[in-house]
Length: 238
Image (cartoon, rainbow, N blue to C red):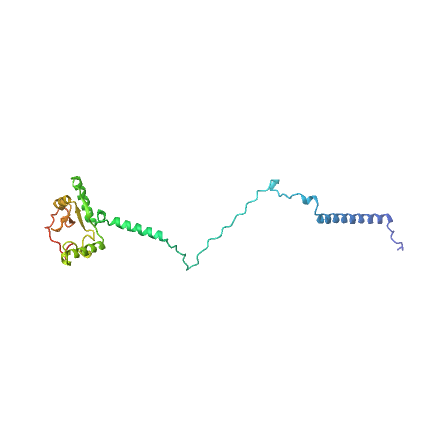
């Protein structure tokens, strides 16, 4: 064993190590200083350059979509509550009533064959066609009547003939009149009355009353002879 100490490193080695360390420290400071300047600099050229995003493979980005406006959702009526109903205007109501009155008048026109009961309407239509073909004009003078008009005619007859019984020889009250039901028709002119009385049995149409040559009803089946004429009776016919 010896007491010799390890040899000391030469001074030049220490100097080189210190130099390298110093260089590293200085470089780090410079880099940090540059970053700080970039962060604090507001007038740098990099900030003035617009930033443009690129698509895949350097392609230009797709155009920006316009924002879609959101429509308000419909307001739902709470359960148990009904929506307010629109009240028709007076003009619309008046127009509707006028149309209904016109249709009713047209449907139940006294001069129209359409207002009659189906059986009498069908038979009379054929009879009228044959009469016109034979050169005999035939028209309906009074067919179906409203109950209101029948009552008015009956009231006028009472005043004219002086009593209920006398009036029923010519006009009956609405509850006994066949005109109100569309089952009786008054024919005009006189030549048509005479023709229909003579051949009406072929169509099932008969004259009823001795004192009313214009009054006809579908009393018998077609081809059967009509019954003898009778006086009008308030208890039987109208």
